[in-house]
Image (cartoon, rainbow, N blue to C red; front, side, top):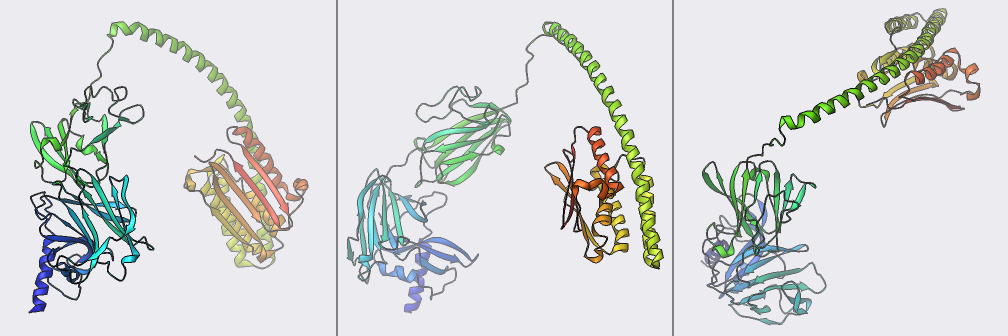
Length: 583
């Protein structure tokens, strides 16, 4: 029977913790102490803060609320006090419509209470007893600015309100018209602390600091109060509240606006929007619990032409509070303005005709000069193109002669399968060479395919390793380079670099985008050569390629072709960079 009565009491304690009405209807404190805790809702298994009430004639039963060995249907799981201090508060039993909100204090949150009737508030610490009272301190701060009681020892232990053991009596407080923070903390372990904020100030109208508007303006946003910035959308403001009285603006000229309030951490606000669109009036709650000092009215509440009014009040039922405690902000969204004609046609026609004549003469002179420059550039480009074509014609037979020579060597060594494979690759290369013979440019993907076929051919002959790496994000079909620009350099790396190394030889070809510049590197691990004797050491193809780079710089003066060759005992590197080649 005793166990049953204890379970029933726990259920009543849990039910009493829900006394606060979320819609702002009348509710009373009752003959209770309230304690803050954390529990797990067994329906959703969500860990959350909770408030537990305990009668002021049986204070010892708060320990039963935190007894998790007793299970009841609907009872929360793993209930623990918010802190080991177990701080509790008692207000006047008939206190009506008290309000509780959490206020951040560094890493902790303290519950606050509005006490509009100037009655007492009593605080107890059930976690403080004879064994640890000397480990704790408390203080009292008024209006977040004056320390009425500096950090001091806990005043005393007492055993009242039906308590079975002495507890820490923090005190009874009453500060009409003021806000008080009472904070209790362990003297050595500051993370063990808790507190309550009690606000005896009467209810007041929300205080507006400023309205920041985002939309059409010189800077993109502005303070609505300034006539020089608000585009003439407002001409009158309430001198007491700073609220605009005749705020009207065209649709799309304001994308959003922010309301900035004075601090109201113990008094959450609700915001309602009354809108009249096409003769139909509707009221919507757009914010239920606002403790921050800033609220942004989104574009969705500015998108339709009509009249609007924002109602800002203490959180609670709409229409519950008198006008003296409500802030109203009206505004009107208008149709977009149509540009009016500023001048008649007969007034502006002479100016238009005069401007056209001047523009026509200027265009004629500019066109004549431009044509002369274009003809000169085209003549120069044609001469360079002929020279480039001559170089390319010399390169192709040179490449084919070397390829036929390689096939002949394989046949003489009786490597028939390798010779057949080589012939297949050679046929593919020959077709490509004939196909691109008349083209000045080919795509990067075609050039990579040519190089791959050529390197496979020569790999059969010498057994070296190679890799082709392209790190350019753009698709290689979209990038063009001069036809067969790289093959002579690769051929030179094989013939004069790694031919004698066989399987130990390695060639790498890399394509990269260097801030819009096309960067190409051909590298081998051969024995190297003296760069100062390049023409004699590197062969015919290399000499022709160097001449080709010189001509390409003339043909494309806006894109600088740079060739850098370095060589030592560890190998040779050929670097080609074309400026501003990749978009």
